[in-house]
Image 1 (spheres, rainbow, N blue to C red):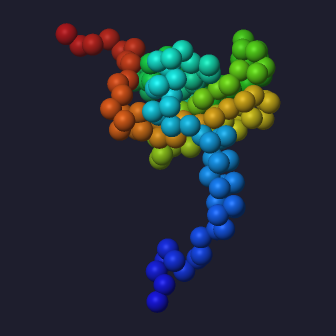
Image 2 (cartoon, rainbow, N blue to C red):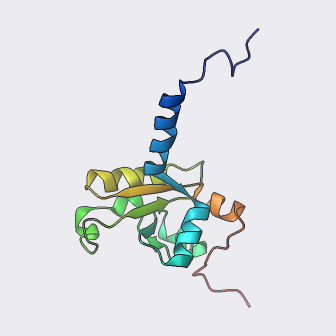
Length: 135
């Protein structure tokens, strides 16, 4: 008797290749963002969470721009071909997808950083905090 996995056959290899290759045009991961930031990023990293959450801890080098504030007038400060990488809290949050959708609707190149803050921490990377440290 087939399991829940084998009951639906896997896609033919050519279709699977196209599917998985396409994923990299939409997403990147925390390790690649970290490594690219060390080399000198060729993208703008946007933390699309609230300013309060951003201040508590964000990926170093990220700019805070909540997804609801991604509008044409705000984006004019960057050239039209600027690549944006967006992230939010993590897999339980759809803020990054909302931000990516807004950027795409504005005609901007965009990728989502899979894992968000949760993934960043899981990789062992540190967050930067803008909050004062209690004495």
